Image (cartoon, rainbow, N blue to C red; front, top):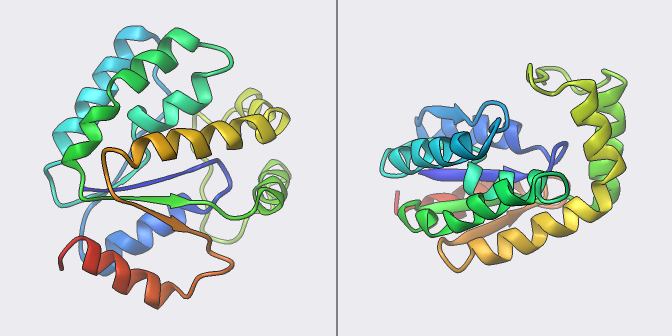
Length: 180
């Protein structure tokens, strides 16, 4: 499995789809956030099952829920962190990390429904979630950076900034890292 992670508005879904297309791998999306403690563990177990598959996963609970639950549901965030060791089964984690200003700008455009063609807002991306990620963006982006550093103890991580990286070179590197 290749995991693609990143804050809302970082370009991760676009990158996940492109990686999947180029590597002829199915792309799975985590879906909405877990609803309670039990669901955190179920979502993490589902991601672990996929880790041995040849696929691209757009977010995994073991990383993303650590970030988004940190401020409002710390017990769920701790449960997600406790499953971080699961990442050892993945081949690679791509962390989409454009500048914070770019992320904030993208979130603003998303809110105004002005996203680039082809972007589809997820059903669970309700106004309350959009407001939460915008209001807490600076703190949560910092938390994301920290969680990715923790994840790098378990899986190889590539940082990707769609504004400053040649995508062809990036894909060559992904292929080398996944031994294709």
